Length: 162
Image 1: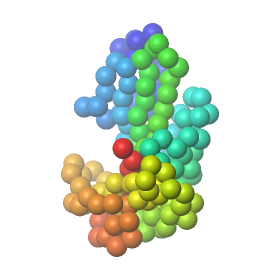
Image 2 (image 1 turned 120 degrees about the vertical axis):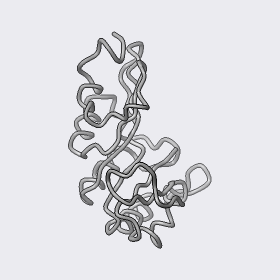
Image 3 (image 1 turned 180 degrees about the vertical axis):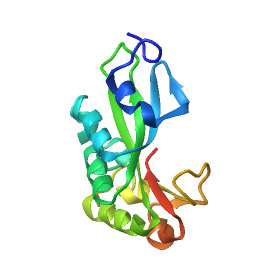
Image 4 (image 1 turned 180 degrees about the horizontal axis):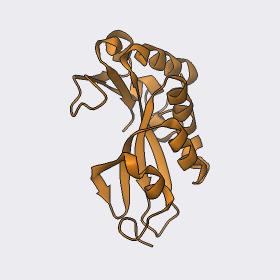
């Protein structure tokens, strides 16, 4: 089964409305601005390690879904669906309204203080402040800690891990 043209179900089908068009290919795709309930369903359909692991020192996907749900946020990530392996899903970003950004940063600092890859989850996060949910470019980029100072300057703040 190939990833793009022939596959209509699976994660590609579930996440279709949130697929980032310029970042899709037959072996996988990125998604953005997906609602937590949809990402929770996607995580439930793949190996449990996809939601429980901490790739690159980030909080696990299940935790990111929970915090996005609590803070009325959205999620982004990457799916591998090349057909040769089971579908894989990595949730690697959470976006919230600017007024909730410091709350997000404090939750990450509180729940994921362990050092991983040379820093805590908040140390390793890249922060972006956006002028709106539909903006094409961020207004500012900084570290996860910058959200505590600058988060409310932006309409939307995202934290992501590379």
